Image 1 (cartoon, rainbow, N blue to C red):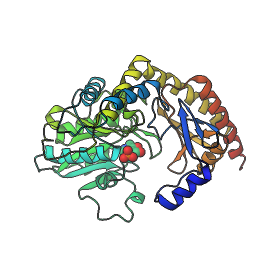
Image 2: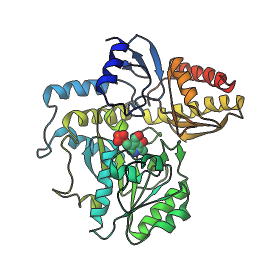
Image 3: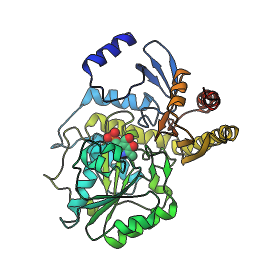
Image 4: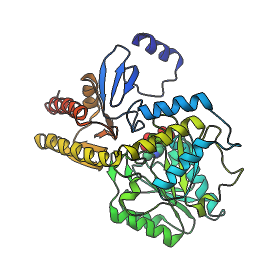
Length: 397
Ligand SMILES: Cc1ncc(COP(=O)(O)O)c(C=O)c1O
């Protein structure tokens, strides 16, 4: 189908709630995608951090094909094998615990908020989350999101939420009380500009939760399943959450979300309290199992660490050439941001025109979340394009 025809159908029949780039992506393989006119792009932000193994990873494709021929969906009043195996992987690679499956990051946050209130036996209903955070677009998720622009037009929000600046322990301490059910944060804020939690802050939040009885709820929707060079980002800090949310890379491109909770907390999600028709269906869960297996088999955590360090080194070399333009490079593993001194949307557009997909978030932060299995050759090709575009952007073009 020609690009113009797709765009015309969209204009007519699809609600325009996204600011879309004028490209129709029709095919992907690894860290490359092709548009409807046959043009190739290097993808350093595949699927907004969903395609953690790149596009159409052979193991994921195989798992989907096999499972689709056996059983695509079965209701959750039956058991299904892939869901059991995926929950086992999450427990084994994470902190033990038990999982509940849904279909997206926002739904996982919704489940976490509900579970935290339930687990307090009705005594605790408040939450502290962080400014600049992003947790999704359902009501509990936008309320947890500490950015007023996501609240506009939707008030009244869910009651009981207050916000602390990220990495400011004193501010959290002031907000936590006897009615606080949970402290919610991303170990590395993604949409908020790739802001990394300080080690002492994370440890102190864990201690604060232990002391006050609030639950530590870590949103690992973007950081989880290997992206930062560990299975889950909290493992960099030597702490474990009470509830962790996941989505994005978990399903290798299929729609899946999950929470994992300590058994003493998980036990409160009894029949009748929460559910999802599609959650953990055999197709998405089989893809999830293939993702975990491929990461373990192919040593992709190490690749994320090594390639991430290389990516940072190359970005730092670019930054040295433009000290007035680049403020900071930060991140962990393959979740990396370059903060600019001016808005970067035009730079992202320039990259797109040059055949490179990167993201600009929080107005001034260029965000890179390449596939964990990206090779040096293709990364270098992408970064050469980026360096070139940055050069022109710096010159004011
Ligand atoms: C950290 C984080 N939490 C939650 C979400 C919401 O996920 P979804 O869009 O799958 O609902 C996102 C999405 O970008 C995210 O980055």
